[in-house]
Length: 97
Image: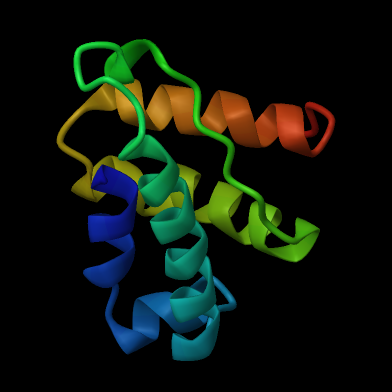
């Protein structure tokens, strides 16, 4: 949720700096909504220990990785969210940095 809220908070200039358009951000948020719907079926007491699958095109994985490194630390309320997202994105693209 922190990631989706941070994406929504980006100004047009911040989106452009990340190489995104409003349509790209909308597409990315739709992927988060799909994962959120999957989370609805999980017992709330187990949700914080559950890994959800976020299916993204490779170009969006790289953009999200840039976002996680450049913008998310300014916006997310929990550092653990950033760490988990960065680890997952690194794994998704083969550990490149």
